[in-house]
Image 1: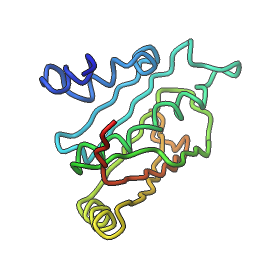
Image 2: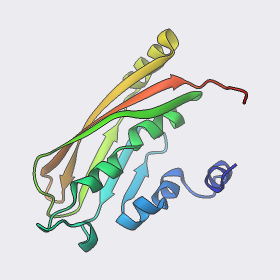
Image 3: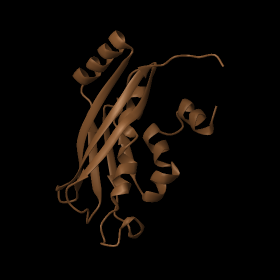
Image 4: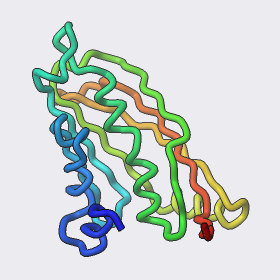
Length: 158
């Protein structure tokens, strides 16, 4: 068992705070917050001198890095016995980010039930999320499209 798994199992620190300590997220200054039921994810990225490009705006890759894993990660918390991966991820940049950006990803009960039904019938499911990064003025900066692939967990003996 890894240190992260042990900390998570002992509930010494909230899962979202633990993920925030991951070096790539930590050094960017990203804040990740999950609701208690894991159905709402909030991502925040501050604009810092080291994540600006030569035009003085946020590197697009920073938004891609932060937004990629979280839709899939929450499924493993919401639906027991499921393995989830990011299958596809794309960002359409709409405006340059001259300030901090944030995004909110939400799952409703109907979507979760649909995924559970697909898992029962086919043993696998896909869910496409679309959401925006917005700046501090509320302008849409980037449209994110993220596809999660879920499969029933198979215990294999090695």
